[in-house]
Length: 226
Image (tube, rainbow, N blue to C red; front, side, top):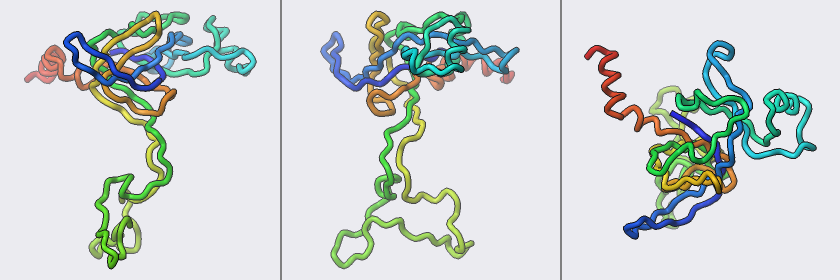
């Protein structure tokens, strides 16, 4: 398992050697500088705190300045935590680059979905629209709030209603890495990923693919004693 922070730049097309065209997302992966190493003994868990994209000195406050000076690295705009067994050997000052992943790797991408403002149930939840005839008084409403006579004095929590749509953490599973380039700091991922252009995303090794690997299944069976 491994993770890295990047920025979604947009989508384009690439062609395979056999002429097949793929729609890919271009992710800018600037060097993720390790600013702190967290351990089980001190922090209760293993992780790396990494910085993404350099920050102007005039924008750095005293607390941030002390933190970065202690690590001996330049100040960054973003601080995030990444985890993974393959990141155990990194130390403060090291950098995670785009070549952490290779072409053909299967990854999960985590980002914040586009915010779509206040939306009705048709757009937000995909509810069916009402009759479009002129005599109908119902078109895009939320429908009945009744509960079959049970506790009709209130709305049951969890009911799908209109409200703020999007702007939530979203994960797309099992996407394929098409190309990586550590010199030009980019990763091409087949398909679309969550978020708007220029938004930050996290790329990690695919969890479900790892769990479904024959060696992992064998270990789980041995642990259960089956």
